Length: 364
Length: 273
Image 1 (cartoon, each protein chain N blue to C red):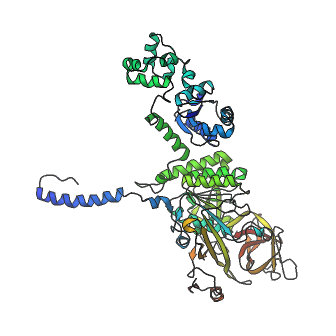
Image 2 (image 1 turned 180 degrees about the horizontal axis):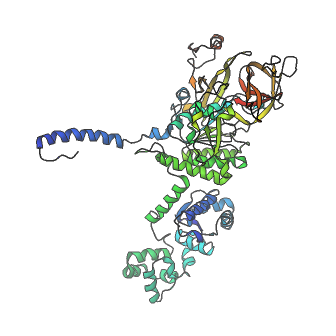
Image 3 (image 1 turned 30 degrees about the horizontal axis):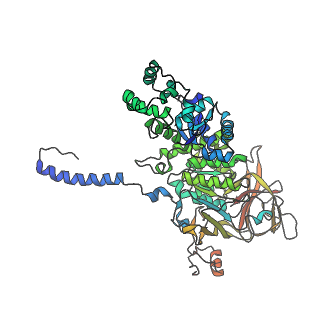
């Protein structure tokens, strides 16, 4: 019989309709799994794992029980116990006990017959004066078989410490809980998720939705964003970041409309939300600016971004002046130019506004 | 499919005919999804030659680096500028169009128009721009639910953390694309794509504009990908997508460079290896 550690969450033993209990249980499993692999969801609220390896690693069974209790008790009240076999381990968890290895029969002896979960058998035995598992275990097996049949023998083997659990591990109830927990945790297995067999990719979509919800749970609802295209002149205006799940319909009408003065494609792969300050100088070291007529005052020679060392400008294009919203208070006069440095390797989109240069986007 | 017994002769002929048809339909419907299909994700044609399966292998980790990313720290500002993000986005494109979900973690400045131009379906593209200190947890959660994850770690990852993410991707059969940038990546990936020989076309001294960028991508990997493979790409091409140059492999001659600088489409053959 395996040495098993059982985590029992008394508040999560009954599933509710909305699945909140199962989700909480999954968090418990996740917390335990950060320390020990091979965790099995036995039924809602109860999970088990082989204790021998982790106990040796974490310095004894007491230490392991303490550790598991620490990591899970923040989520929900838990009871942790270790014993041989699943049946004894669950009982040990209920009492928060560690049963001695090999002493299952002695450990189980004081428990009442009711724990076997067979009321008929328990009632009958009680009328015969057999009230504890220890009494039951001391009956000869052949007599149990003759009087109580195969079911009785299974219970007898468990009570006498010869068998680890009442049901076979492959029993339906166990496997469905495990499978449902797995589904909730991992989504549908990846192999079945792609390219739906009978059409449709709803499985993949649902799986992704769960993952995104998990990240939002971790970082806050605004942390996950989607990006939508919209019409605009500047690279920054052509996209809009929306919080995931905001479900707004993208304003696609202006995407394909002409925007005179738009920087020609290809578009830069990085658009800086906050433009980076830059300096542009000519051969003599004097700053290069854009004149009121939209022309450069000198030929640019070197560029420095965010006060980093100077790099040599090998090519440039522009400036392309824009005079936006001249009719309103948000009137903006600016000019853009593309500057390539480092032997035509690195390209940036510079913005000149009020006599200063900014890196608006990088052609990464 | 079911024929009445009114006309036995016609019935037999009809049964044969229709049953053959329905068998064909049935065979088509119940055709097993081959293991290679579920094991692989499609990748854009110009990039296919870099991969031993001509596709992205599920569960693998790909690291995309530019040359000198680490040593360049002091020389240029403004993050990475050597095409890593463009290449990472280009890797997503084909699978994204085929219905896979993609996520980008730690890339606050991704250009939507560029992503769209490279072929990423923005409907199935989720961004976590600033994951902060819990970036690894966020990446792990994304690996659970999406097929392709681009990760740019904001902080240097510890080896154990990197190993755990690699294992997670393997277990969940996702593709993890790491753009290490300055943070670095301490683990050996299944495949490493290195960008080299970047050159922008179409721009001169105060004339023209940025039209396209040529780059050489070298793929090195483990096992079946151990032999380095080189591919020359236009990334982005004049339309913002990805294209292969006609010449692949080897080092670009001065003549080819000269031919390209006159902005003709390069059809010059590459120097044989």
